[in-house]
Length: 186
Image 1: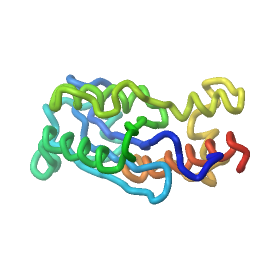
Image 2: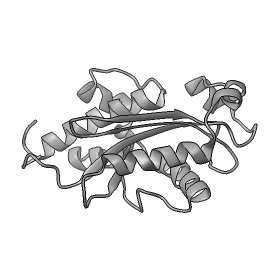
Image 3: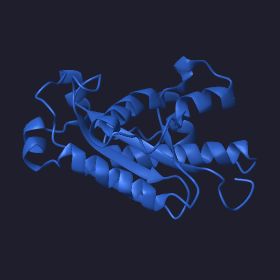
Image 4: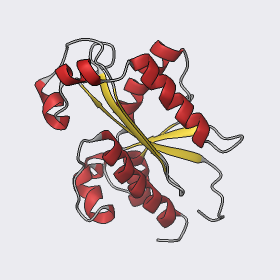
């Protein structure tokens, strides 16, 4: 950033789920980290809200609905802890801005869960999509914003692990590099 104190508080977020839409499918894990140093992180695995799943979703992250039913955290408690963590991380007078790689997917699950369990979303309506930022910065087509294109430039061709915290950290590293390039440091 141009000055040493960021004027906005960005939080990289990634989720893993049992299927494509909230309500019908479960949010299974949340990973989040602050973008700027000192970096702080949050991770939780949640109890599923039902037994619905798609093979495609489950094969991506390899979490077990049975194991999460037994050892996952109650969703209301998990969302409360996440909201509290966000509040503890945010500098005075700043609200967190949700940052994700394909934010639409992760955003819809978290927003649904926050409103369902807490009655509010601590991110408000502030969501920033890394793919869209990349598209605008490099003037590429949407099809060229997949990790297949972005990873070689920012992660040394490292694929996402589909572990929510590890992916949130990788996304934070991508976004930080994009910000530095945008502000003339890259």
